[in-house]
Length: 115
Length: 114
Image 1 (cartoon, rainbow over the protein chains, first blue to last red):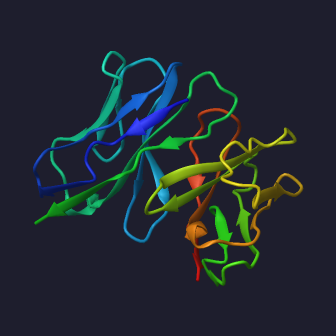
Image 2 (spheres, one colour):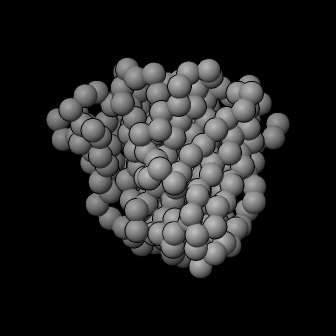
């Protein structure tokens, strides 16, 4: 079985500062990795994903995450955050090479960007 | 185009009553998922439908929970004899097909059991 741990429940940061949201996973098989974001009063939406290939993946709004197999991590980073990045961020895994995309989520990290 | 829609948006029910939650996936999406988001448990997978295959029910927490998908489109999640611990936001998602495709989430149904 797979599991996901997001080490920080809340991360407060000032605008234009860098941020890292940590995610570790546990699995005995290969996995696909995802970050989903939930903006206030909105539904969950995909931010970025790692399936295979380059271990560094990027989103269109400046976030990036790096798959580290040896450390079983998939931390999310952004060099300079904006107020509009305030949201809840969920790390998730699904079983690699599987015919189901069911997601196992972490507990979520609330990113609070302060002016 | 239209996204995933869910109804009702809010549901308050008394303990012991049955409830039905509805999900309309994005047209053409063959995979449909139900998740539950609650304060104590976070986001949990409940059930997965893919085309005409048997659903993956491995996440349903008890036999009071069931779901069906009619005609490969609309899905209904039914909770019988609701309990207070069933209070949560129930999320539906759909995706293009089986495997790690992006899942598009609906706005959810907030269920409160009094």
